[in-house]
Length: 130
Image: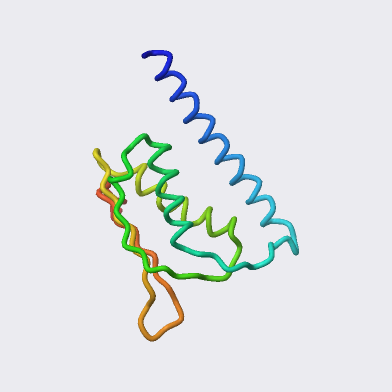
């Protein structure tokens, strides 16, 4: 049992390190002039579901802790950038929530606009006003 827990902990550390390295490489890419990737059509629902699964696995919480209300919307942009942006928002919501975490993810279209809105609500303590 101890060995299994050690392996789980080790894999979680490797996953966090992999994520950090990927973010550092992406940040370095963004600092280079003319390095923007080609824009592609991105299915936002898939990006959100992947981010939810990754965050729950990373923090060892059941996926039922995160509920989602997602309209099937698409946008055009850089898939790596969108994955990192949405992934960080959901990851932080799960990471900084109270125990047990309760996170809601909403994606919808803003009426009369060609915009979409991502709203993430968690049961964490929040950021003090000061």
